[in-house]
Image (cartoon, rainbow, N blue to C red; front, side, top):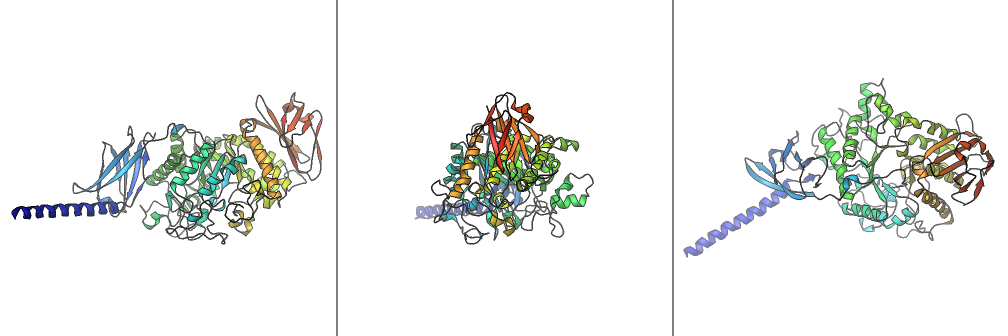
Length: 624
């Protein structure tokens, strides 16, 4: 009987222990709601890893970590639900760390943290450059590869293709299924507008108001789907560029419900929107008030402005960027609203990323309208050096050229400052840039007027536009759908310049992804664009060759791209009538060449005396 009582007591004690362990385990899981970065990688150059732990009153605990890892710093803020723990990862191998959280010298709970193995040669990854052509996609409007994820129970806005500004269902799977189409166009690189979660109530397809920067929006797919897109692209020798946003998040970002510290976001006593006059950043006469509103003001009311001067925020964004590069094996960044943030903080961010990946290219959206303002923001700028400033940003978007492209080919009658002279004047200021080969050149993007609409669907003018961006210095970018004649009028709203690509949805009557499915008009645009950019793909002379141009005469413009072994002559006639161009003026570049072969038609032109140009036309001649 005593044995039975003893056994009963032992079993009862064991039961209570098991119950306690189960309850304790559940409590531990509930204690930490988020850990960011969710994991990290061994062998990084920067060996200080800041881990953010988020959970109810977590700051009351003291943190320690296994594997003899050194904790270099623990930072608490006025919000007790956050704990920022910085560890030393030097010589740390891929392993599973255990963080212990103690109170009164007793372990209250533990948290596992993975350090993963990096890909071989990750640091030395090659990025995009002037040998590439970038294809810009708005994924929600490109192709719906998986209709099952058009809506998601955890997110507010549901799929509704009937709403021009709603979610239409395009996704990562749609991009993967059409990689061969993109490659056949001559594109080598994809820049997709942001894919991270955006839980705005409306217009969330835009995805620049992100609500979780460690998570792909479920309506696009999963994190693993994004990594798979990268892997599938690499199999086809293509590159993936992530659209990264440093300036702001969305109003529905999970931190907005429980801000880590009052200085995480830039805040004023009353809501203050930026005035968008970014000239004040470099203006030696600018008031401090104007500069503060420019940098700290919110882009729009739904986009809280991040304070990169806060070291916690700066480190958080730097690590987030590097985490995505490692996780998805990315090939580059395009950074949105680059010069809306504190210049010094952004320079530090760019330097941290490129220190980790010396060959990694980052192009910043510097939407300004003169070359000096653009050149200031490119790495090693001579203009920035005047103020002892280096942005560390390798590339900028050539908005001054884009400004001219939208009007030049409508200007049939030249005068002192209209017509093709605009291009000449644009390139004449290239001396301001530190690296003209690393400028992003484009006619349009997801925020601008569609080039086909601007030129009233005039195919001859489209050909001139594409010929220009394919043959000048820099990295050409083409906006999805233009290559099949798609247009859209921005005055009708952004949705009109972001229409669905025909054939991307089941039931579409027209499938422009296939040669058989294209209309005759679509085929005309596609065939020209494909031939032009596939020629460019294998021609180093227009990738990195030097450029010489000649002052336009009679609204004709001639420039040469050349290396020691090859010369290409590009000729534009912007007149509504045929023109004859005398060639003796160009002997400096023609040299001993006697003829030029048009890359598109195969027609040979005698260079001895003159070239006859059709109205509104461009020639790309390989000299022989």
